[in-house]
Length: 102
Image: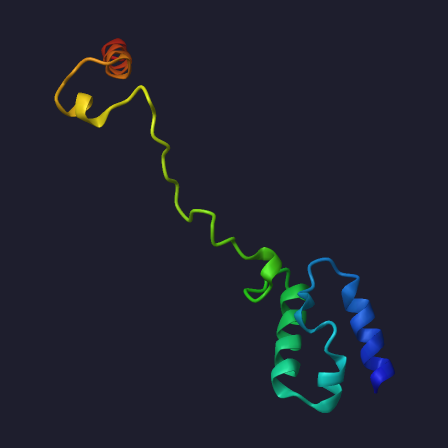
């Protein structure tokens, strides 16, 4: 049994997209651990259906990366200047663009 599990694991390791979480758990499969068995089958299903496993840490989005676009503050734009109608280089350019598009 162990030889068969070793062959299977070795073959599946050759696939880059195979989730590695159970590829070195052949001893747990041989012992009959149900959680490892079903997780391993799930990983195989994801591999051969061209899906990314939600449990594969290699494809998770990093926590420190923002989930949404956050615009950077610009030094030449002031919300107060725009709010109170003060002229700035940015507001002048915006007014010129809107006037030329009319």
